[in-house]
Image (cartoon, rainbow, N blue to C red; front, side):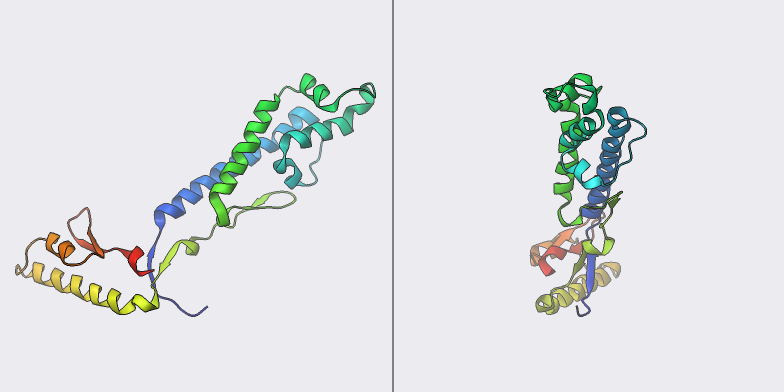
Length: 187
């Protein structure tokens, strides 16, 4: 990829994804913490993916593999599990659903699921805004225009910034009363 000019950063989107990722990791830890409760302290998780994919199913069948010798051969594994588990099916499925909802919300920035842990794929530079080369001339002219108006205002030779907003559609007022380029128009 050739060098492109960075003109901004979507900090709000990056922060939102960071918060979502933190929640996602916390829910994954909560799901993993169900294992000793249901399968015993000695159970060693070999692969995280099937646990996260369908937590309830995973726990039922792992429980059954460990304990089927204690129950009659005609026993239903799901009914047996739900009757002895301290966690309800609804609690387990709720955590699993929450995990996958957040995972989906993160889209391409969602962590990958490894055998033992989640791995973050969230990269700060994925939220950079880059100038569209076809719009460079307009962007540069707008920068010069805003800088010139700032100089005139400093000299006391210009009025309020609101007039700049009326002059062009690709600017907006900042909280401090200055003028800023609407970056989304140039990416």
